[in-house]
Length: 508
Ligand code: HEM
Image 1 (cartoon, rainbow, N blue to C red):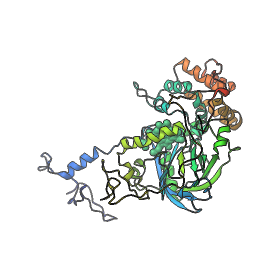
Image 2: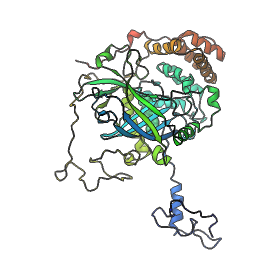
Image 3: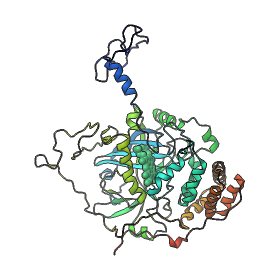
Image 4: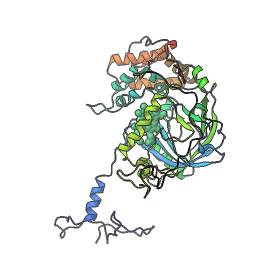
């Protein structure tokens, strides 16, 4: 007799092997008598154990912890003057979306309340292929050079020897790369601890190019503004949360019909405006002031469906800023250009070469090309020839525009790592002196102090304080006093005039 009760099945599902053969009576292993060894002939049992041992796939190297949901994107405003992307070509037009929210540095089992950016990735299944927006909940990023990204992440992950998070490593990197100060300051306000996953805005950070049917483009930053406002936690509130509170909150809100929704808006700049802008528009550490570049609404994203299966619909989701559609092009932002390689490459490793064929990633638009085979090819394009044949040739659909006007890049190949200048401190200074209120400032100081105090190296502490002093001497002095170390002078950097000016067209 089976040792476990068999309950009446609601969906009449019959237990089978992985090959679909019904298993009689129960799922036990075959053995000789009650005390003898197990039998090699028992495919069912071997299959169960072998599959179990292969259940884990590599977690994402960053953004490993997360939650997801499905919903739709709907066009609410006409932007066909800016882009010919088919997705936007009619008010009221809808497309299915899958969204994944995430923290950044922690492992898959880490806490939803850590102090860091929250990712919000959106896969929009348009009639002309998938458009992915792989955004964070803050409008700027820590760095602007892709070469720094792996080192930056390493400094926040575990120490190679102790396998512990390390405050010295953390502040050592940030103090040597002061362009990060804008994002560091935002992270150390209560914005660094959002109240779960779906109570924040999300931002592209990079400029993309929206191209219209005449081939004219504007630079665009995309903002998803939360229709229910942003909610944050104080450090004390964050410390009290259950590690999975964000996942739970999202799931329960959607089950209860309280659907998260976002207004999709854009800021735009012509290339002439971009050349006259004070900052390099290809620098993801900078915002575009809303007073000069106001938000223009585009559409709405509503999340109204929980996944049925987390692994299939969220863990296996593969988002990439390189998944673009005709009418939206990448800008030359080096960080974005680095990401264009990094995401599909990580996904080929994490999910396999045919990750795009998994149901959650497969476009609604039909696929026809000459890619074939590889592990787990579930859509191998039938009998269609795997080359451009005369037997069953593929057609090419021209973009409405031949090429994008204006941008011309000329120059020698050079090893380019950006330099820090006084320009890098202007926006953080405005944040400190004009945007934050007294309570925000007090929280920022206690949140920085609470972490920086754990660094053992006096040199690292002093160097980081000099970065804060370059933003505002009073800010640095308050942190120094809070952690009981001497006050320091501002970091010396090059003047603003020495910053490389953005040029979108270079003629020899
Ligand atoms: C050169 C800079 C960067 C590199 C090399 C990089 C690399 C990566 C990699 C390899 C992953 C894991 C992908 C996967 O396994 O599916 C990832 C995830 C992610 N990154 Fe980045 N990243 C960079 C900058 C950024 C920036 C600037 C943002 C936001 C503005 C961002 C937002 C995200 C998000 C939201 C995810 C999670 C995607 C998901 O939900 O599956 N990253 N990144």
